[in-house]
Amino acid sequence: MLRLALKMLFGDTAKYLMLVVGIFFATFLIAQQSAVFCGLMRWTMATLVNVPAPLWVVDAKVEQVNETNPLRDTDVARVRSVDEVAWAMPLYSGIQRVRLANGKFKVIQLIGIDPTTFAGAPVKMIAGNLDDLRLPNTVIIDDLAVRRLASNPRDKNTYIKVGDIFEINDIEARVVGICDAMTSFTGGPYVWTTYERALQYTPASRKMLSAVIAAPRAGISPEQAALKIEEKTGMRAYTNTGFGSTPKDFGSSTVWWYVKNTGIPISFGITVVVGFIVGVAISCQTFYAFVLENIRHLGALKAMGASNGRLCSMLVLQSLTVGFIGYGIGMLVTSMFAFTALKNEQPPFFMTWHIPVIAFGVILFICSLAAMMGIWRVSRFEPAMVFRA
Amino acid sequence: MPDTDPIPQRDGHKIAVHAKGIVKTFGDGGARLTVLKNVDFDARDGEIMMLVGPSGCGKTTLLSVLAGTLRADEGDIQVFGQQLGLLKPAQVTKFRALNIGFIFQSFNLIPTLNCVENVSVPLLIQGEKTRVAEDRARHVLEQVGLGERGKHRPSQLSGGQQQRVAIARALVHEPRLVICDEPTAALDAKNGELVMDLFGSVARVPGRCVIIVTHDNRIFSYADRIAQMDDGQIIEVHDVENGQAPSFQHH
Image (cartoon, rainbow over all chains, first blue to last red; front, side):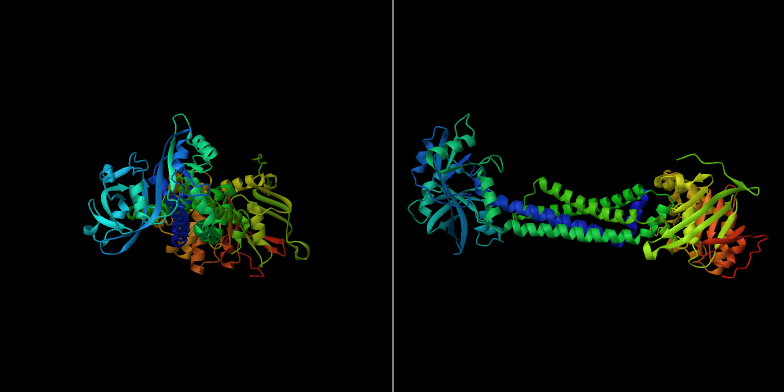
């Protein structure tokens, strides 16, 4: 009987395709938009990934990593004075303008790190040497800058390479290395230099220290150290150990700040809700129409002795079949989108394991709802009705 | 399922279907309508019994009640010794699957299935394996002269051929009772006769009872007996001898 149920479904090509398209559309909208949202939120934490340090100490009012409220230079020493801290180094982080060889300007995320320890230096070098950053007027750029700072981003011959020179606020910057880094929320490429040189590149102001990056002593957890720093310095100390890892995680604080203070989640949320509504509307309506169209046949089966349970299992199988096929196609197309997005590094895309699982749950809900509507109709259909022409 | 009673006998004939004092009412209040008014009905083992009468006289309702697809408000129904009133709804459903074959006016073949698959449905409902059910379906399709059309879908067949497929479907699980609702209403005269010729030859066997509701006076001669209904009651039962059907005022 279940095989016949599938033949009944596949035999009605128009409705079958409509059902699959409805589920596909819902899956794609839910999964793709959620993954782009997660990717965008991940970009907000890019500085934390690109400047790895277990502790970030910032001004007491700072809630997210892209917000700078400068500290005094002496604050580095205050952090170092905390017993639970193993080391603490100054960090500059700010948006600056670069003038290219062709005279055009581009925006970059300038990072200034301690030249002695290189705390906060890029994790993975692609070309050049990190030690060369100690030479005068030198910078290390990320792989995005290679294209973004080229005079013609479409011409590979003009891509930035080690040895090339550009200007940051009229001061020469010579590229001595290229590294792999996560794209920033603002879309500007990351450029590393030493802390002192970063201050030279930046228009002067009274306070210029963006943050103090630090590490806890052995045997002290980052969270314990952060609490001690806050207690003894009055500054805000965050851990940088991964999203959601501790209540004081800077990444989590950053993401929640964007969720609460921007329209981004509402915008993406609306699209996801639209995907759900489209899925429910198309699938339930089409499946109900499919059941209505077959009600006489289902009624005949009922008269011939098919139990309500058996007819229900047929409808559930039909509904789940279109659900699985639509979900599969939806995730396949989402994967193709992901492949393109990750290759071009645009738009942001980050698929956590939760997204396909939640999308699958939503599709199961839609299929169950559609099946229940059909079951409701069939279970109330008197088999005697088939005798009425 | 409760045990069946011994099959009753009357005038030397085994009674296949016995109904006594059947009352069926639809609607409530002012819209209340009694369709079957204390109907008594017997159909014998091995016979083709026709139910005739004007539209709205309760033929189809009586057929539904006898087939167990509709529950009577009052009265007893025995089908081959089984009291339908004593069975729970699920048991009635199982009883239908095992003992009753159906032929509908509009065939009710599933359009997306081919003939073999359509005919195998009653066996699949009983839980038979697909291969066994389809082998049996092919065999019955041969019997109704459609052995070559097993792979065709209903839409590729004429009306007469579709009704022959429906006959094969009604007989494939060798039911003891076959219920037919206007089997020739959707067919022209020639196809109607062809279908009834075939039906008479394959359905009329000992141990089986066929009940047909019809308006079609051309097929009265295929009956063994004809029960005439009017206003929710059976007013007369005629024997058909030597294919000579009585003429009725309404037809």
